[in-house]
Length: 362
Image (cartoon, rainbow, N blue to C red):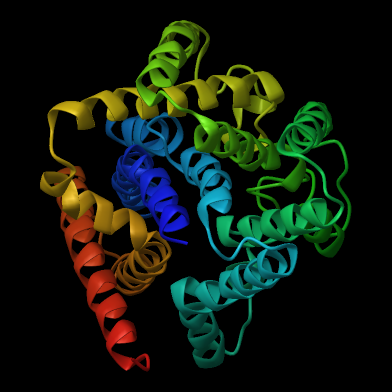
């Protein structure tokens, strides 16, 4: 038993680079969400470089949603609660949490506006049922639990994820019908931009890649050699992918250039960024004591709490100040708000975690 505990500690120590990847994704995510939600009130925002930096640099390429889903796949292998039943239950919880977040993010304000005005617009329904990454994460964990129930190995799951991605890219925007049909089908393939953000076919490949990566990492005897080889492959791919992106435009391998409709080649490019950053963080940790980076590790462990907290604050600021009072925030204020929101969300998330821990029986 002590040897088993020692093995788990050794494996867990290898995940600090994953913590740094997730922390970087949190920073990019919050800055992106502040820009795309508060910045759209600026006239001509679509062409403003300050909006484009927030949307594409922080929102698409700096290890954001794709890194979160890759990391979720990796951590499935390290979790003590990774039985098929536990994964399905966790997936269902995340899926329901997506609707709870919808209510507190924008839904409550849309409903209040409808009650006061006597008119419930389509946006009210959208605010309550809009597909969120939590919905996808829930479906992904449920599917992973079912695949594990069938005793599929990680390589087989990755092949399934790649096949789904190969189908999801060309099928994006092909099937469109009633709003209800678009929304339901949009959980699996991209129907419209309003109805499906994280379609299962397009995004499960990130989770599946993380599953295989985590399985390989657990068996790795020499992490330095593993990450060194990883950098030699992923680094040049990342450089080429970003160079081609700069030339052809954002998400050039995806239909309509829409990030959420990621094709298999686009997913490979995005994954190369995650793998390059993981390798870089691994060797950074050879020079910098992980204890000095504890704030980022803590952020990583509180990612779900930070996600919910920051969205609720953005929803409040956007609904009350921008929509109700007609305030248009200048770009410096938006970016400053984003930086402060990173700090505030991380602090509140840790207080939330501490309180939950204190309430648990000893």
